[in-house]
Length: 278
Figure: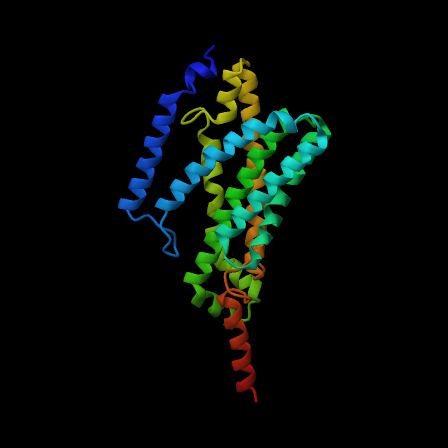
């Protein structure tokens, strides 16, 4: 059995290698001018993410042994994880006040799965088991919500003319937006699907490797990893479906106090139709 310390010793060499890799990532992003759709470069974001990850993991490593001793502290820690995920996902999708609606797709995906695990006894109400499992599920819901929400809004912005055409044919605002945004938002499921399809052939995910390093049998490690992947598929499917619905209804948008472009076009079309009928 390969011990974790032998696989990746925590020493000065590790720190130097991590710094080099982070600098390389920042350099490539800067040279290639990698940026999001709003022109914000990713070089600085990569640097900040790397430093934040180091600080946050150090803090979690220091407190996790303390919070698992009592259920109230454990639940507070899980609540903090959820709040950070909602804030991160929401601000990735929009800069306005509607960002907090990201809590709906993430929560609706994660909470039923966690409740099922606790009620069936598959995961005990203990931090050493609940925190990592919940963290994996929240992380999956976050990723699906961000990808689904951003792609749906980008598609509506790019193809607003097609949405307007649907409105002109008598479609409801929600239905017209869904027709355009659904295929793009659905692509948010592809990373999870590909990971599940290729597990064991292309990659050995973290849960599997972690259990092997902890001394568990390959059979048990495989069973746990299968559970994680299937649970993530359920969480992400719910998250994508709900974030798409929120975008289609104009609840989650990028305008300042105004639903996405199609809503404005719908009102304009109704106004013109009313004027023509006079």
